[in-house]
Image (cartoon, rainbow, N blue to C red; front, side):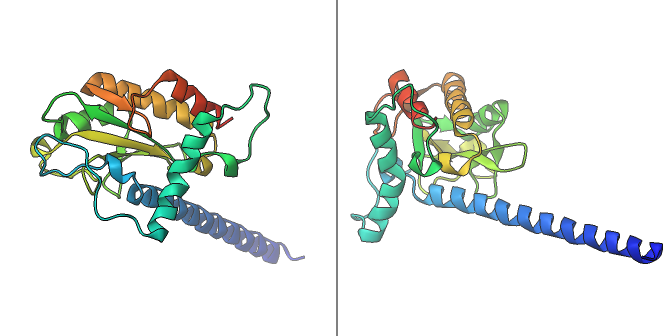
Length: 228
């Protein structure tokens, strides 16, 4: 084959491969953002507070769930509760991702009556390496710019403002991750827990589990076992 024609064929093949990789990366990024967006919409309503309530009492939002909403919420919450109650034997091998909890959700509630201030939150988030994302929540971003887990405000709709942080207060934070959507669920979960611990110390807060009870080492270990 003529050298000039061969060179053109090689260049054209390289361009096709590069375009394919770019399209694949874009599609994967959109999928990740979609999963985080769905998680934010499905944060347990019992963890969301009304900002007009001065004492930040936790109250359910809205009317009772219809059938479709109930199925969506159960998809995220029930697997966590099931896995916590049923510890896997130490000798068990790796489990398939579809058997992992769909959503792990903990929260951090402020000790002080006024709640967490926006400026303090942003400083604390930056100290633990969280980034402000397009959904207006803070996220842990991995080396491939994919979302590992998110942190939302406990006040509906769960977002943080971009400006006026000195006047923003929220009574608590909701942390959520989707083990089935990350490459190394155990490593991400360990980072998830460490981040909550660090923010609890820096901000001054009480850690809650998915049942609005104090987060214990036993609960953490049980959920961690469900990811192995």
